Each structure stands twice: as C-alpha cells, then as structure tokens.
Image (tube, rainbow, N blue to C red; front, side, top):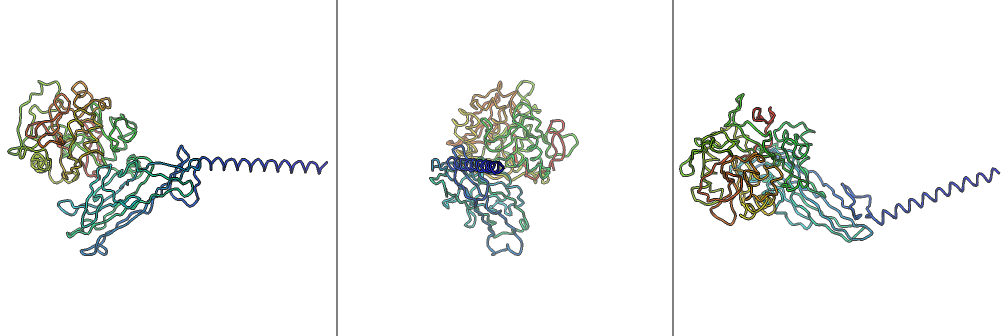
Length: 521
C-alpha cells in the first residue's frame, strides 16, 4: 500500500512537470510566433510594436570637448569627439517583414560656449551623418547649417534646449533574426579659428544624443529644472505648466491639436499672467518697462513690449512717422498711450529684406539697444530669426498652423538674420489667441474673435517681422480689427520690439501679473 502511494505521488509529480514543460513550450512558441527573435547581446532601450516587431535604440558614448591652453592654441587644430548611436529593427517571425520610423536629435542641457567674433562665426559645430554616411544639412527645428574652416554641420555654439533634427526617418527589414541596424555618426567639433578664443577656455557642454521612436519632447527641460532646482525665468515658466490652458500656458508638442509641434510653451488667451519688468529696478515697474512673455523656445524666454515703442527712443530720419491717435475714440485699443508712434518697415530701399531694413538696423538694433543700456542688453540673446517669410495664401488664406509651417518650420523658405531685436512673427500673433481661433484663416480674424481672446491684439495696426515671399516690397501686418494682411514696406504702422533672453537669465520675484510682474537679473 505504501509503495502504491509513493508510485502515485511520483506519477503526480511527473504529470505536473509535463504540464509545466508544455506551458513553457507553448509560451516560447507563442512569443516566437508573434515577436522577434532577440538575442541577449543588444544594449539600449527597445519596444515591441503592435505587429510584434522589435525596435531597439542604443545611445552611444557621451560627447565631450574640453579646451585648455594645453590642447587648444593657434595652429593646434580642431578638437573633436564622435559617438555612434544605433537603431536596430527586427521583424516578427510571423511576417519576416517590418517597417518603422524614428526621430533623430539631441538635447543640450548646459552650454557655456559662446562666440568670440563680432560676426558670430560658428565655433561649436555638430556634424550628423545618417546610416549611409550622408551629412544631414537641414533640421526640423531651426538650426543653422554652416561650414567653417572646412567643417560642416549645425552651429550649436551657444545653444541649449531640445532639437529634433530628423523626423520620421524610415527603417525596414525582412529579417526576424539579425534584423537591420542603422548606425549614425555624431561628431562634435570645436573649430580652431584665427582669432583669440580664450573666452571659451574651460567652457562646458552637456549634450545628450537621442534616437527614439517618437518626437523628442522638451518636457524633459521642465523635469530637469525641478531636479536641478534651476532658478531661471525659463524654468519658472516651464514648471508652471501642468495641462494645456491652465494659467494660459499651452505646450506645443505633437499632441496639441493644431499646435506648432515645436515643443515650445506659449501663452494664449485673453489676459494671462505673463508680464515681465525689463530695463528697470524701480519698486513699481514703469509702464514703459513692462513686457509680456510670448513663450519659452528652446529654453529661452521670448518677450514682446507691452506698450508701443517710444518715438523719442527709436526716431531716425527717413524711417519714422508719428500719428496722433486718441485712445478714447477707439473701443479696441488696449494700450496706455494716447499718441501711437508708427514706423516704416523699410523706408531706405522699400524692399522686404529684413537685413536691409533701417527699422531693423537703426531704430531697433541701434537706438533701442542704446536706450536699454549695456546692463540690460547683456541679458538679450543674439538669436537667429527666420525672415524668409511666407506666401500670401499660406498666411492670409490659411490657419496659424499652416502659417507657422511656411514661416518657421519644415516648409519655410530659410533666410536667417542674426541679431537681438526683432518683431513678432505672424505665428506668434496667431498662437497668442485662444485655441478656437487656431482653426480660423488668419485673414478672417477680427475684433470679435480676437479682442477678448488674444492678449497680443492691441487694436491698432502693427508690423510683424514676416515678409511676403515672392514679393520684394510687401510684409505682413496685423490690422486694427485683428486680421492679417500685407502692405508695402514704406507704409507706416505701429511696432513693438521683440527679443529672446539668454537661457541663464535668473528669475528673482513676481507672479507675472501686471501689478507684480516677473523680475529678472
């Protein structure tokens, strides 16, 4: 009897073991059938797609440049560093066929390199080669492709932020074993120029090369602000953001309907708390020193003057006119002056080339900068402005999303101007309106849709920096009833200076209201 019991127990154990083996076999078979056969030697982050394919991303080495008097001097040559991130796609064994796309870019967390020349010759260049060894020459985010002393790539000399360079890059394979691997080459070069570059001795750069399935988002910037307790004004604004519309902030990632998809934080709506006191340390900020935040772009705050520019500051012969305007006679005007000062976009050559405009070169980037003084202008970044413009149909007859695409983004006619002071873009104005206006053609916007829904609308005709492409003498302006239109550059409209603050400008105090604006240093 005892022997029979032992026999039954052994049979039961064997039966259980058989069930376990069968279960394991079925599990392995099911995985093998649906998923890719991935070996254990892969490094990096991967994911299995809905079709059972697997895509794996490998980061590569960290890029690093350390310049000192020992390794960087006249005649010593350039300093370089290279890394090779990879993407590997393995097909499901069910189909032995896989197709996917991915994003290529980078994030600069910290960068103390700067320009050592007056004409801002690129010194820190990032060269990106695709899996076929071809140099990438255009960027989905607004990076400048340059060639300096035989080195070609993107100028990142003083850049910080997140940059998507290549979007939806295709990858395909017919293998469920080895798959296919794309190996990219990122080369960082500190270019040895003929001038004194000691300003960049011991400069630091913290850059992350990123290949991933989806768009690279700048919410990482806000997380980084919190983790490192960074006290810049850009961090202050980015960390205020919670959900779209809260506090008047919208995060323009790929998920924001009709948004710019540039990972910017923008203020929109009737009257958000986005005031900044700039150019004054007085306890009560003078109205002439009030500015408003358009948004955070690549970790830089972009400001626009709240009131219209003072004629005594900007006046220059041949580029200025003033017109008396009684605010009490207009229910639209939201500013504070009863005399509105108006200017030609360009009265010198009557062309719509911003680099030739004396409104640009004299009124804004000479007279206005002199008025602000060295202490405050040192906080303003030398920025690249996209001044290629857009066609009439892609602005006046289109929504702000289309206008943005043809003015700034992928479809833009890239013409860049580098300087401190500009004017608002057409798309800045359009995205300052509440989101229900983002589906209205910009030529159909009017006071009814804008006066109570767009904090940037002032009720008086004013110039933008955006030119009409395909024309030599016309640029876009905001009409006094809110819609976009074009006019000759020798016509006169109001202006409000616009500029980006350096990414390291500190937040000091204030809650962003008009009575308690943000203070910076």
